[in-house]
Image (tube, rainbow, N blue to C red):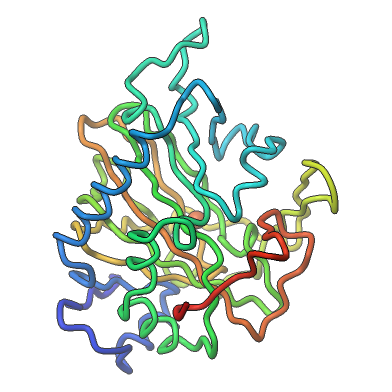
Length: 293
Ligand code: FE2
């Protein structure tokens, strides 16, 4: 049983939280974000979507087909706010099957630097305290995403470790997964393998060539994920799940009538090396920043 912590009055990582994080690989912080903050973030995202022209970019995100891997619009989004559609968002005639607000898979990957509302959300004390309390000496904000998990068409995300896509040496990735709306088994909540961060190492690494859009995976450890042990991480609105880069997690498709909006933020430690062959790159004039700007 993965413990849950009441974090409505969170003032830092406690010894019990640290123990749970080390043992299970994930920390469940209920109420860390106030509901009105979730609503504000969602409203800002809707404004950004209002301004997005779906005819301009038709990039699809799918963790199963991974066609976005070869997509420059995706690969060059490390310092931008860009919009990615669901796999089922287009019909055979290449027409959207739903209004754009209901057809997007996610928006990423640098709203924490490109948008003032998202920057303030990402840089709130709750995340800073959690990152430093879980061992980051000097956290850098590497990636953020707004994930829609749309009613009926929200696609699955296969079991993976975030360290595959956000590699540092040594591994230092820390993910904050925020339930902007209630996440349940029915609408595609996250699932994780408790203790799975200690069973085998980083299974694979995702590389991108020095120039262009060529990418590839390399197996580092072929120990299979023990998905028989997976547990649902249901998260009421405002709950934050915190996990490291080795924690195996997944989510199923959303076939319900309710969306499952989530926000994610990933930090790395400045002291760790961030190899240049990571997919997510920043231009020299836009280096990664910390919680202070
Ligand atoms: Fe992930």
